Image 1 (cartoon, rainbow, N blue to C red):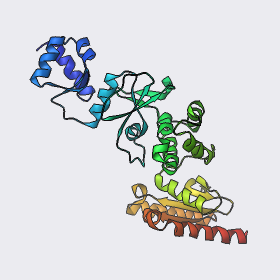
Image 2 (cartoon, helix red, strand yellow; image 1 turned 45 degrees about the vertical axis):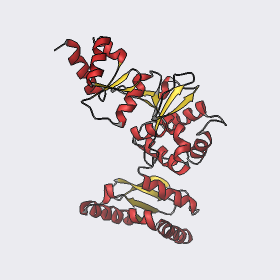
Image 3 (cartoon, helix red, strand yellow; image 1 turned 90 degrees about the vertical axis):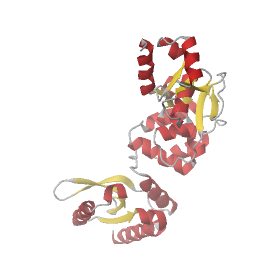
Image 4 (cartoon, rainbow, N blue to C red; image 1 turned 60 degrees about the horizontal axis):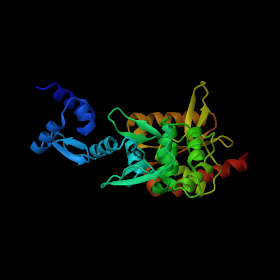
Length: 309
């Protein structure tokens, strides 16, 4: 077996079965050998100068790898990068690429976006050869496609998962924002509605509850509100109004669905009640179908405690 063969096979294993013509030559494969491999069907052209191994089934990831191999200045961006970063509330399934102005255009199936401002900090290069826009740049570019509510939810997600900091998001907005640039107005609204000091919300359910709290005009709650119990332990409620010792917990099925979890929740609520807190709970069913009613119950408790204060 030629030495180049094992090198090429190793490359395929780490790059989704995709390789460029320059990389084939770098690994020792001659142009005539490449031609023979294409003629035999061992290599299938994906883009000009970029091939897929016939041993690998075609996939979306291969197209992303092929685009990055074809144009070293291209990066997977917008909602395609959102999916790669596992952002929530992403419905757009098109393939988006970001390239500098003047770059060679790519053909279908890509939506190509050109931009004069792409800084090194905006690009993350993975070991599989795929380049992505960074988490804050991805959010900025995708904001109009996601919409205001989804963009606010994604901001909470990337902060909670520590993909970046709120200062990084703000810096990205300041650097890229322009009245005529897509994403600017949406991100201005996203950042303008969020205090920088607030801790990140952990789930989309919590974000939807916060939206309803704001919509119904309740006082702004403290996310991850600390409550000190009699034994000195500190627990954190999803939302709290410390002035009136009212709390709201969101029972996400991912964390509260088992018998042991429900038992633990009841114990926390009981211990919180001992130190004067009233903790209400809302389930995913409440959030999906009766959220206004659940938040109205919280409002009623706050009103009563205000009067009693």
